[in-house]
Amino acid sequence: MAEHDTNQLGQPIGLPVRGEFPRPTPPYTPMQGRFCSVVPLDVNRHAPGLYRAFANDTDGHNWTYLPYGPFGSEADFTAWAQANCMDADPMFHTVLDADEIPVGMASYLRVEPAAGAIEVGHIHFSPLLQRKPQSTEVMYLMMRRVFDELGYRRYEWKCDALNAPSRQAAERLGFTFEGIFRQATHYKGRNRDTAWFSIIDSEWPRIRAAFENWLAPGNFDAAGQQRQSLQARVGS
Image (cartoon, rainbow, N blue to C red; front, top):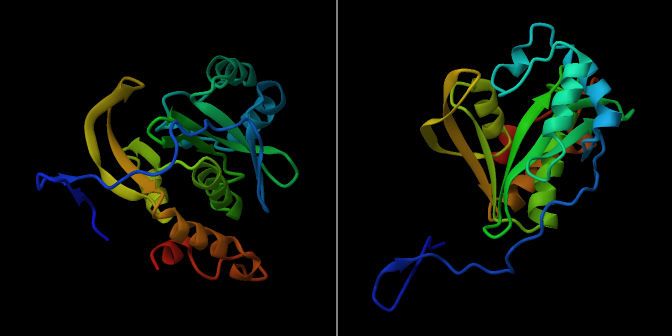
């Protein structure tokens, strides 16, 4: 497929863009999966459970690449959430397990309805969620809303370029590495070079099918172990 058109002057120009803009902003409604649900963060209902879930990370290593935390008390975490998690951008969500216990959070941010672009970030999965099917389903549910429900053209993932686990997660989930923005920002008194990844709408049908095949009951054995990895399916 051609990556560009040519105008009457012989100059390369971008392909036509179809659809109406601006696209809708993400709604404050739950996203329900088989293993978990992703709901708008409610500080009063979710902050105590989130703090308890995050406390399972006893050495605090999950906070290293986030610009906030760790928090010394539930009150400190609740105050931070009240001050930072109530806006539409970033739009924070809580991950609830099958028993509706908070086990992690993630957000939509840098929402650009006019461009049809949106970023996923502030991803903080507690040890209760990490390396489980729920953690993958969270990402699928958030992508499905962006592409299928809202009709966005571009979904972004950015992280500290030194955060190897985040970069590996992006590639496993089907994101394409786009490069590194040097000295893009700073946090906690140190520099951050930012690694950029994206999925675009033309790639989504293939990636969606990979997620749905991976999440299907037949992909897990009696012990709950995957039969085929998501990355193998995304890359096929």
